[in-house]
Image (tube, rainbow, N blue to C red; front, side, top):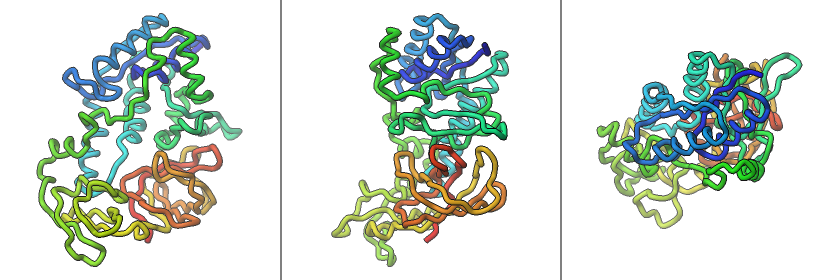
Length: 354
């Protein structure tokens, strides 16, 4: 059987993924990715407790384990661009870029350095190979835990060398498997925090990295009437309702973030509706379609499937028109395109179509 390097965060999903592969006869090596130096403080999947949990599972199961420092790559390929996007008034999804560039980029390079054939993670997705010999990415069997949205940027090279053992089962089955094996992480809760932002305060993190963004500006209504002030557009995202710092007499949402004018536009929820979007950085997972096609799209991780027409434009862009208007189409966020349970493409929202 091939050898496989398993990214172990210290959580139950990656721990069970490693153990499932071991049971299937793979030569397993566990690897804990140190993406940030936390100074001994726990940040979600990073920190001394997470590392200790991953090591304990490897020792319990009896396979080799390492800690690999990818913090320089993470800083260059994920964090720096995260800050730049906020400077440009966009709302990026760092998990999407981390998966594409670190967990299935730099981590594959690490596997090559060790002479290991494959990599694996605890993501809830599935893969298979079509009759054309191209790899397909599919939603996880457990739709409530499906993570295909954040993996839609994976290339054919990455998919060919990746395994996702828990994608074929439910979260409850994963926990049951951990309990059967006596893993100490069987009941560990899922981590939801940004690994590089202490206390999940992304705004404070950005201000520490880019203090020039902290500057007073105007909060205005759609007609330009000044409603109040803000202390940095990086604290706002399209669709945001809480923490606006102004009173309009009715429920208000962020409609637009303009970092050049240092202005935030707020208004009623119905003004958020958009009929589509222009997407960039499109990754056509199993090949670029020749023309427009019907699909379902997701414009946020926990958002619904939205019927749409997707039109490829050039090699890495697309025009996506929804069958019914959608609210809070947010520049910088990821968009994933589906045909049933197959991920057709993934990209980044460039601009909404009004």
